[in-house]
Length: 387
Image (tube, rainbow, N blue to C red; front, side):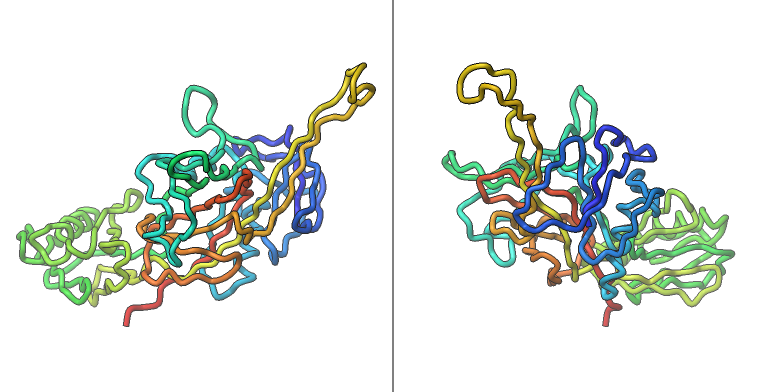
């Protein structure tokens, strides 16, 4: 489904009602041009059952009743084998923060891609994309349907491809591992972390003894548990990192080290201690995206002589949908913050082999034309319990 929205009434700060919906239409055919003067198009993922009426709204996207949130949720329902959906339709100013324009990003190369990237292009030092203004003296923000991956640059000694890469998305929050202090904890109580006991002693803890002080309020006990886990003299700091939750000080968050470590078990048979043993990260994903070319004709008028004499043709802005698996557009996903990249085919599951929690998506353009990206949805599964 395509939803056409009046661009002039669209408030990219995310303030409701977020643009007047003009009309809806079925998805266009590949290669079909659609004039969009004064409008932008929201593309709902194929298969998402979406009803649009006079009460429908685009922004704020944070509302579960917004068109983008409903479209993503319905898309996930279509594929019940997946547990979560991440999405970005590039609509408001905050979406600028979802691109990584910094140096030091690990882009797809022939060395870190599976299957190996075999085209004669290198990545540039920075992402080569069009994203609006993410920094600088002017206003920060963007306009819908304006995010693009630049074409490959071939007129240099080492040709480089165009690229758009997301910031790192931490998947830990979708499946957290945690310890919560719910009441008094008696000396001798234990927390088993990967089978190793962390024992309550009811006195100041001793570094190197794998113990914690169980006296005091729940927040005090939680802080001492975090300190004991992170103590390099104890048995845990090499495979787990503990932090006290900033909102609930009686909750200790545990993150496996490294992010690809999915074998950390956690339980406690003791009163006053509640544990959540989950296994954050994923290794099974599927992606949807929408891409197009954009063209603008010349505005012709007022000429009294020459071949354009008497013509009065306004400029027309048109979008032309391209095949999601167009040979010029390569899409990669990483769950280890760009250390390794896996090629993704449109709406085909991909196994990234080694599970992780640090997700990035990278769009690569190896063609000669600018490719516009109108959003993506990433479906992913929770990890199974370790054997």
